[in-house]
Image 1 (cartoon, rainbow, N blue to C red):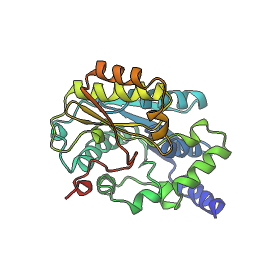
Image 2 (cartoon, rainbow, N blue to C red):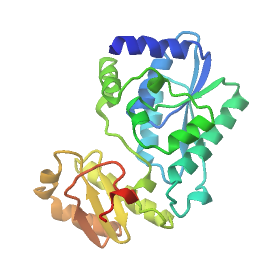
Image 3 (cartoon, helix red, strand yellow):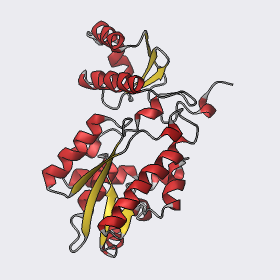
Length: 267
């Protein structure tokens, strides 16, 4: 079944002739960039948007990936869009519309025929407001069109020898902050520094949700017990406080997508 989907993906890519891939550096978009570059006579350019609320580590990993395989890559810097300054509930839609409009303009000026992204088949089954923006801008999602799931993309990436095949999913820093909260540069820096600290201590895929001066840590499966019993726990707590948080809490539910969404609040 996966082989049939891969053949379908290659067929979709071949007819596009030239494309810009919205490249975040995650597993899905990395696999798409890699696969597209294997298609003969297909002109491919990976484009990464860099904003104040994107993780610097993700940008660097995107750069390293394209350098390793000698893929064409372009960074586009975008200032913080004021329309999402207060983290509105339709933030994802507004953000995608702004950022992909930038990519669309760039692709048109550079003479590329299509703009594609790494949305997979699983994503289409979830509530993702950003997908509406992609549809409005005629952005194609070849992985989703080929019905490739996240699990299948990871398996294919592993077979291709891509080191990031098991890389945890990420999201922009705005997802760590409650809706209707004014976003500041300092707030974003605190969250990124906190997550980088925990990553360096051996906690990949960690989320630090910021509730004013409280850091609510969401761990990936299997890491709650580890962090509770970590011999460096006191050091980690002290370091997080030095970053700027007054209270450090561990969410016993662990990491889950959309934990900041209003529908997940206790009624």
